[in-house]
Image 1: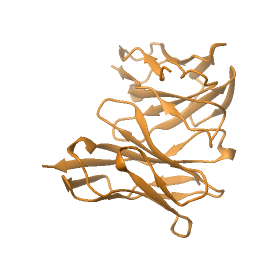
Image 2 (image 1 turned 135 degrees about the vertical axis):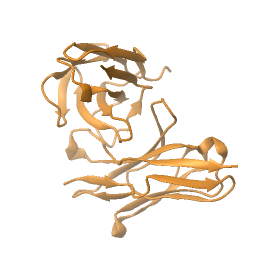
Image 3 (image 1 turned 180 degrees about the vertical axis):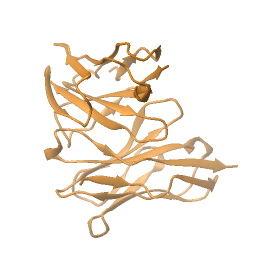
Image 4 (image 1 turned 60 degrees about the horizontal axis):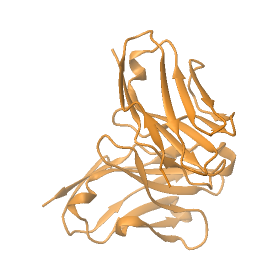
Length: 114
Length: 114
């Protein structure tokens, strides 16, 4: 079955520290991969996406993610976290055969210490 | 260019009632997808509409139904509300059926069923 796993439910980092949020997927076909961010009570904002090509993709707000097919992973990184990055982060996967739906992980809540 | 909008923002209903949620897609987008996000979970795909036809459906009962209008706005209807229907309902629009078309999300409607 298709699935997305975000192993970390909650992560706390200090402001200015680096960040890596993990995402593993289980998918039969070539996946299309996304990271979204959700602030409390808000909708989802797209951070970045991977469809093909360069496996290191750059997104908004200084985020990047690396697609590793051998590890079925698409981890999100940021070199220096800002207090405003505190939010919930969702990894999602889809493919052309899925009739358009995205499958989301359960999310990782990021807290930032001053 | 306006983004995806949803109405109402919040809604309180009682068990057994019916509810209609509305979504206006982003300009130029012909596809709308609906997701349910329960507290502490990632969004789950309900269904997608492409050019006024249902294009795919997730694991939701028939009491969840939808419509898409010629201007590509959409409605989600839920009959015979149950307590477990309490959730944030997210609408997303995209330029075409996909992936790889990117889905852009609205702010959501928070539904509480008492």
